[in-house]
Amino acid sequence: MAYLFDVFTGSQLQKLTPNGSVSGDFVGWAVDISGYQAVIGGPGCDGKGEESGASFVFDSEATPESYPRSDFAWRVAEIYIATLGYAPDNEGLQYWIDNLQTSGWTPTEVAQSFFDAPLVQEMYPTDQGYGPFIEALYEHLFGRAPDDAGYQYWLAELEAGRVQRNQMIIALIEGGWANAGATSDMARFGNRIQVGLAFAAEQAERGIIYSQLSENQQIMLREIGREVLTTVTDDSATREAAIGTISGLLDQL
Image 1 (spheres, rainbow, N blue to C red):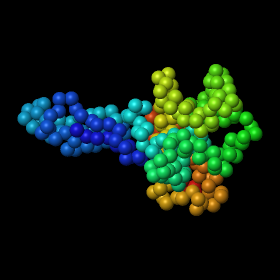
Image 2 (cartoon, helix red, strand yellow):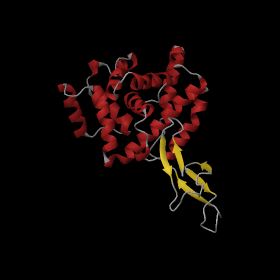
Image 3 (cartoon, rainbow, N blue to C red):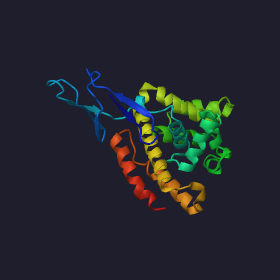
Image 4 (cartoon, rainbow, N blue to C red):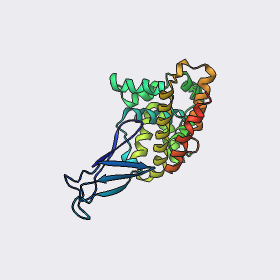
């Protein structure tokens, strides 16, 4: 057998086991990957004669069911992109990961801590009401405006104080993944998360630390983070195309 891991988070995504393979087939002895296809060699397989060997081709395309949602980096990136609408800076990503890992924070507490940041307070000032906030979350998560029933429901809940903004963020994320009718929306969101994690990983590779950038560089990094997600849809090809632009975009800093 062979194992498929997420290169950005290190989380195991799938275990690849050919039908009929047995101990001694040495399946996984050789592995090659091209795009989303994985070719797994089993030199001990006897399908064409004793130890004639065999190769098995798997489609390793990620699906919503295979996303590593238990991974702290993934969960933080969900909250980051849902709230801000752009790919994360690595320093911020690592800050919230650390609080989940070592301080016992919950995702809801992470979402609340975003509202302590001046940038988020500027994006969602309390005097503008909840409408723009609801519309922004739907756009960031689902790529569309809220339906009227959903808008009115969340507006009433927020205005009555029954739900806080951070709780709505988590509820929308979890509701999206649980909704069988939102498969396309969440495939898009999942692709955006993967691009966001790749964006953060490239920053780490280059030693880019957000707090050490000039104000203009910080603005540029946020703009790049927004730009890299612009063309990402539920089609995995758009995800790979976006990831391919990251290096060139960060060269602008």
